[in-house]
Image 1: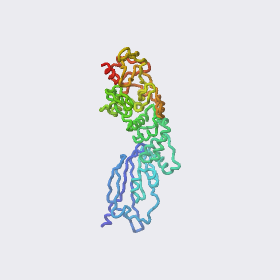
Image 2: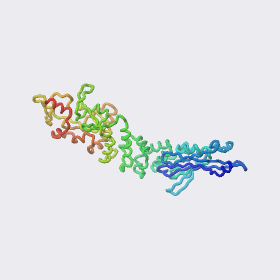
Image 3: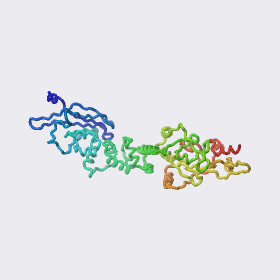
Image 4: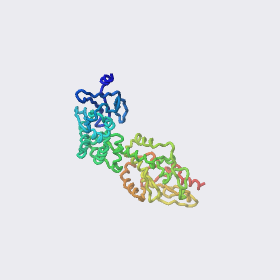
Length: 450
């Protein structure tokens, strides 16, 4: 009765997978079966009772794992005649676009070593000699991949026509060495790739992040991408990495509406602060006060969606806001965004009598004795950066290349959105100056007058 029950059971083992985005964009499935005889009068029966499904990631379907009745997974296999060589895997490739079907043969050890994606499936099939895999993909791309893993010493070369497809396929198949080679090739030939009719929109977020890490920001700025096929995506990933660093956390001052970092809060003055602060050196100064309702995500959305900035320009605006230099003339630290806003009075104040004087250039009142350093002016000029470190020299060199992204139009959170754009020699009307919020020096003037 047990033998009859075993004969009536089907011999079945199936493994289904779905994936291979881009050039490998169909489904893959592997099936295996074995029904052999040993001798003339003896037969071996493998009784498979059931299988269970387990979800696997990357959008693939479930795979079935067989269970055996009584004993190990080898069942009734005669270990004395076991083939100790590598199993030969037959891969059936179906290229629906070309209407071509082709079979590829590969040793299981080579396949699992070169394509880690298949390890979890083929390692569980150690007791089966013949394993068939069906793949829906571009037959030429798969031929390239098979040549790569079978003859690594004579690996085929990459070109601009196949590098994107191979990159996507190798990333899915977990071919890390090939992924690195593809990224290196794209970095070296990015200008030619952007000019060719290659679709780059199919690259995943993971690949975009890896590709962005291959470029320095100066190299990205030099890339000519007239159709914006790649630059915006890479700059967006660069911006994510930039803002992810703790020292680059951005806040907006509730008084002057300027953007600042925790380091800049200690180094830079707030021109519209309501209270004075005595620093470590005993100097009365003012600090930025963060607004509790401001959010950097909403700020970026405003720049991107409402003001129609490209990610390239947004990156450089944020980069310029995060980096500072010190001016030789005014002695103040300033962000690169405010490089052309070193304000001063061309004439000295005149004190006829009393404690209040006036600047001869603009008529602005100034106290003879002030609690804090009197800064500001009616004329704007460019700051003269003081180069103290190697990083300062790099920022000064980079400033000339990114100025076009900083001066195109006013941006919320920059000083240009709070006051008029002032070029060297332009004066500020007294009426416009009086409409600003009261600064610490103006508070001092009012105190002295009283």
